[in-house]
Image 1 (cartoon, chains in turn purple, red):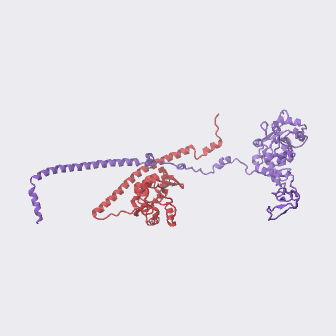
Image 2 (cartoon, helix red, strand yellow; image 1 turned 90 degrees about the vertical axis):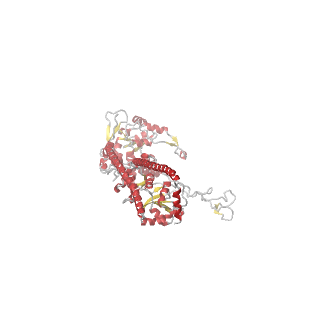
Length: 398
Length: 239
């Protein structure tokens, strides 16, 4: 892959003491294979079924009677009952899965499918993923390995390790390299198995410690054999069940230098096929660059995007507004003329009031005047009124 | 220790269409626009006040003139009606139901303005038993729109809280403020349709003091049907 053309460098550590120059090795392409927990889980669950031993219930279990049903009319259930007499067993129910001493429901058979076939490529995909995961420190830590004191992950160690023969030497090496904490954890947490396995020759349970991968066994197998939790494996035959125990990726692996280098040949790369697995190239990831955020924020993408539509926050929220007829500020926002209008109305009212007052005053004055003058007229009329009256009465005859 | 701004953020800010400068510019433009709208609103409100007053006075003049000559003055038929639905949604036959839907009277005590013409009068005839309607005056129209006027914005019902809202939607019909809207509705102008559809159907409260009987028509001392100018008093009780 283009992202992997520049291969990082990994240091090769000695197995004891300091060395003047630390050798450096390029990281094999396997470590950049896509880490696919789903593939690993699938392959692991199926692979784990392959070391099962067949078990079944006896074929004759519960069938070794000649029981027959008594039929109806005897005030008993119609289940087959054991024939004969003279023994407690006679008349007892037989054959049914609900009966005491009867055969079980669906008796287990030996020809159950115990093993699973998995596509070769899938198996290889899973192993590549698992190996890649062993170089990712967070994954190794989350698996539970104590890797804080290690100088580097992936941990590559000189080939001298392969020639170790004594367990004492092996332990000394582990302590030197900082891997013994993981072994200590294993020793500390050795427990009796929970469940019936304990009396079925599986008494103790151990955690998994470091795994040592070598290219040539020159004694290393025996040296590490008795250290609790430590497993050894040849690089040619890496087992997924050991690389990802319980389908949990990120086993702590100590590689020897030659084993580490061989990984490039065994698993190949994306350009060169594997030398040992015919036609096998490393699996390609679905996305080469998984940093989606970075892709989106890149210049190439951003310059081609249209403008962001402005979120109209103007009337986005539910706005509670006061009644404009009660709150003047709200009214003025809607109708800035309102105050002027009220003023004008007021002025008009006052003007009308004044006009009306004038008119009322005028008419009152007129009335008062009329009153005053009429009083004077009445006084004059009283003196010579008779003559006028007589003239008026004569009109009837005409 | 100086805070380092990540490069992606720097780039984003540079590219941003919401950067401070752009925002500032937009804001300035908006403030300017709001000022314009408010000044227009002031002038137009003034104009309309005069117009309404003149209309009233003209009507009085014509009536007096007719009286003097010994003839009658026939007022022009009303162009605007306000309809209020006064019956619920249960048990409404399909034709009135459909007409009520078309008029946006989907719930009880909802009200709408409607332009009166032959076709709409026919529609009103069908829904008479379910509504009461009449001819609103300026103050009623104003009160409804100011106090209970909600706009249809983005398929949502939002209270009209500024002239900007009206400007955004109805600027192309030369309606930029509340008084414009009131005028367009009251005088049933050229763009009555747009002004009316801008308004969501009014949701009124049940009348203070209650109804007498909705089952009878207004003419028969009930409540439904045409009640001409008495719609104004009813709206005052329901607003």
